[in-house]
Image (cartoon, rainbow, N blue to C red; front, top):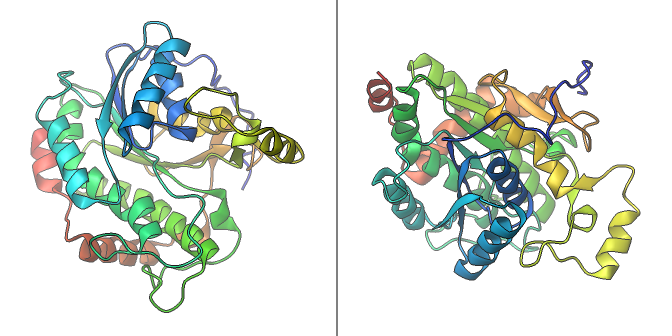
Length: 328
């Protein structure tokens, strides 16, 4: 659904974010990198996370070159590896970055170009659902108390889940989350995004019920593609051919830089509330506005079943009671 109200938010002039800290998964390229660049440009301290040290270093250097005075650090994190997730979260909790607060987490990392054949992670989970959804479910659980401690300072920290406009292109009810009964690359991607959106909406309902002052918001980037995106050495360097092909999609596409506008607004706009869904005004492109999620991902029964299945697959439960105490 396209929002009817005209957007009043200027994504090129964010409110001052000085003193605030944000963690971004998959921050070394694409939407994650440009979200980091926008947040750093507004004065925030940004923790770029990713699984490739060299790519993280390249993104770190690019951000510092493009945003003079940027405050940025890197964190090794593979969202498809539960051990890596827990180690990274322990580093944040242990004060490795010594910022004293975590104001928001952008759960961005994921696989867009899914493998043609079903692949498994080292712990036996289907790769796409593990990367796009299960890993972020575990990471959010691991960082919930840390976020709640920031809430004790009188602010409402946020977790933002990266949804997708593809969830409107058919009903992909996640009754077989690991696709054990039949794998298709497109289904793997769309189903994973239905799960992400369902988790984001269900998380907010459960946080409210547990009296945890942390907001969970879902945002999607529209149709954001590399060939419409500025060249950034080590981050986005599309070939001439890709530039030409993507130029043909200009009427319906936008850059990844603009695709980051919706998740960034979901992180920092004081008017955004938990349980909301944000995306480009014209669905695939445009300024970020509030929208309505797909019926499947917002269905309360689907959300409940997805949550419980994620708990089962990850053997992880969110520490709601501890988070509520930490926020007091």
